Length: 118
Length: 115
Image (tube, rainbow over all chains, first blue to last red; front, side):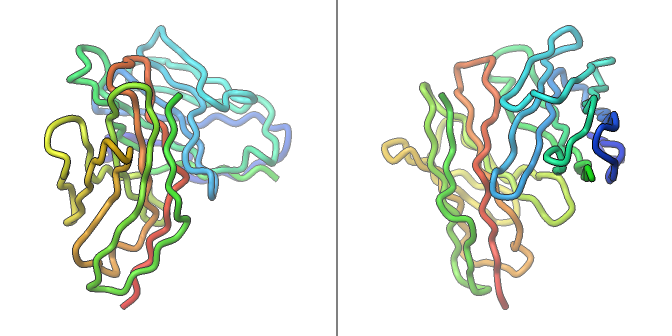
């Protein structure tokens, strides 16, 4: 089984619909992230969470919200989807906590959720 | 502010030839540097990282990267390319001493290895 699991893997929806992408992890990591990948733009950070009570906006958070339901679960929501949110979305985790020697920032990724908004 | 540049959108190499995928970075402090690879319809997989120590870092699948502080570069290399190395490669950086820092990714370089 994958250490970082994303559901759904593929989703097609219509403009204005609410969409939730879910992420769960078995790595025991404190930190979780949502990234968006667009061709030619690399990965851009949407939101990140350093623990259950800590949620932070990334560089492109407008139009998105998140929920950290437990250490192992981090969901991304699009309240009213629009076509330019069509992208490949990745959840990732990192160790976090402790000293800077234990948290190098290395990320562990899920397989991705491809979202198409018509 | 942190930033990463991968100056080549695509790199084409013949199988058996050496390959280089370029990456330059900018951070205010010391960098932690990473290379990830993405195969079609898959998530990103970790290849290697530079944290401290030897400037030449060896990673998975025969890849290596050289940290050059004066040129602020972290180029990915492999002595002999394989067709199976064809994929999308991402360089990433964070500031070592900024505990709130996140990984910042480059835009990616598509590597194509032809038989």
